[in-house]
Image (tube, rainbow, N blue to C red; front, side, top):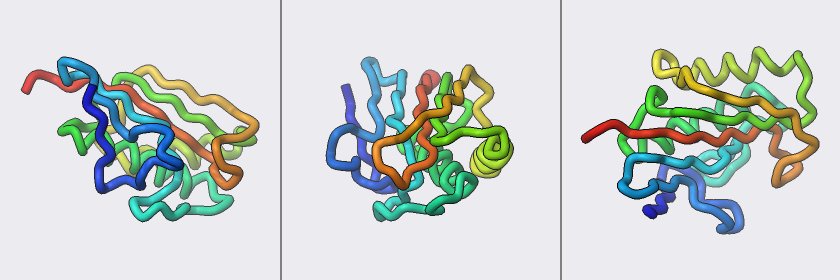
Amino acid sequence: MERINPPTLAPPVRNLYTQVLVSPPGRTVNIAGQVAIDKNGELVGPNDYREQARQAFLNVKLAIEAVGGTGHDITSYGVHVVRYNLEVLAPIYEAGKEVFGDEWPMCPSMLLGVEALGLPEWLIEINATAVLGDE
């Protein structure tokens, strides 16, 4: 297994995970749950679902780019939303489409309303799996 913590992402919170895991033979990519933390470890968009979603989707994009992939290589992703309600649905996905543009991952996905995430200021967490094509 190749564990990667790209310099374009914040270091893992409390060093409990790796940001990106590439499985042998190096083609399947597992991206840890990304939250609204920028590469300096700062929270983006406190109390703002849209801004937190934008940063979380951006972190997923930066992670897949760190291993030579694009949004088109993502094979599945999950979105976890604290205190989910229909009013936050459109802003979350608008932010994601803004980040990915034409590379929006058209793949199986999941949105799950949750009571809480790892830290109380986090509102959105997005994990993803990707498969990279032949080199």
